[in-house]
Picture: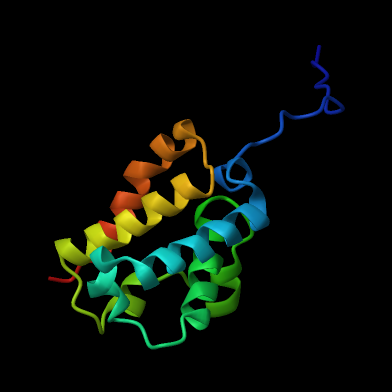
Length: 137
């Protein structure tokens, strides 16, 4: 006898970090806050100096990258055809100090935009790994 598989049952909804931070709107607020912090906090002066005056283009790139990385639409990969973040950061001298400045800005942005402590804890190690991955000195 063959067993019939019930394919009519709904699959449980997959919840990804992108959803937990509020989807596109939540991510946009986090990215905007991140760059406001980077632009104004003296503790981030090293990474701010790596960017040209207008942060709008890089703001869009970070939004696109984080969208896919957090489980949302893969906007960066769709736009560029790849997700090679080391190539994009290659021209800049990025060491532990710059990594830590980036993390300070991102962690503060998550807190200031009301991301829950549980989600922040869940993202902290993966964010560290990304920031550390682009180090080239």
